[in-house]
Image 1 (cartoon, rainbow, N blue to C red):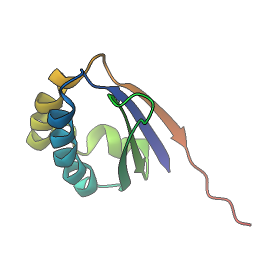
Image 2: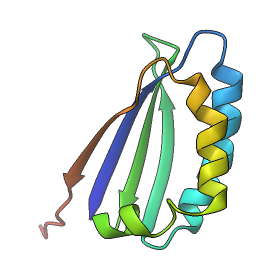
Image 3: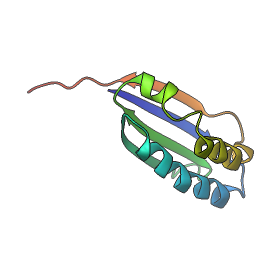
Length: 99
């Protein structure tokens, strides 16, 4: 499993537009092959900061499954103007351990 965490700082005053885009993104990610979970958390300390947590079966699902779709392009066009800076994205491999 791969955990993708994107930290996004949104321009002040554009939180509602960004959250509308995230609502649309939720359906895109959940329908994507290999997506196990999608969650968004808003920072308490900095209200314009959001963290997206997406769990993928493999990183290949992330790179080829949905990013060419029209729904993804529409989502990016909707939220990109809201970004204060390009999102910071990290990938972590998750391993399941038996106890």
